[in-house]
Image 1 (cartoon, rainbow, N blue to C red):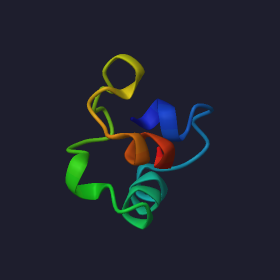
Image 2: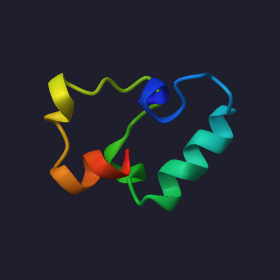
Image 3: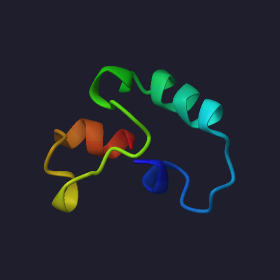
Length: 51
């Protein structure tokens, strides 16, 4: 998930978690190393758009 949110590695973990919280996705993402399956199949359409 980290690479999807911050592909250039610009932001700190704390900043990435803050973005995840703002998008109301914290309950769905156990860690920043969480792997998104093919085409984001483990998220519903709206969640994929937020990421």
